[in-house]
Image (cartoon, rainbow, N blue to C red; front, side, top):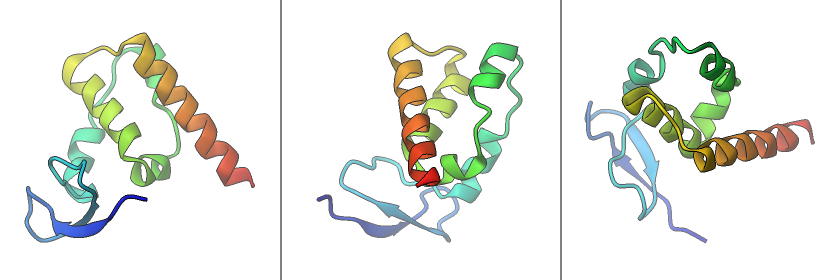
Amino acid sequence: MAIEYKQKCTRCKTNFVVVTRRTLYPVCDECQKATLSKEITDPEMKKFFNIPPEFYEQNYFLKSIKIGYLKFGSLSEKQKEAFIRTVKDMKEKKNE
């Protein structure tokens, strides 16, 4: 079990973020909204990232994949598979 604690956001320095030892750069949801809300022009990727917003709020991995796509413009096949698997698991937990 990982130890979790709260630390202030490194951008705004007002909101707290739950972090673990693996979190390199803690950023709150408010600061990441601007990055996550950028327009995706590719229709295939637009459909790929069309998941409920609460999934992005609950899972840092999903946020990082979307931010990586917006920054670099592409994803590897392994990233796509892991994203799909994570979303599928979250949907199953939500339905239970």
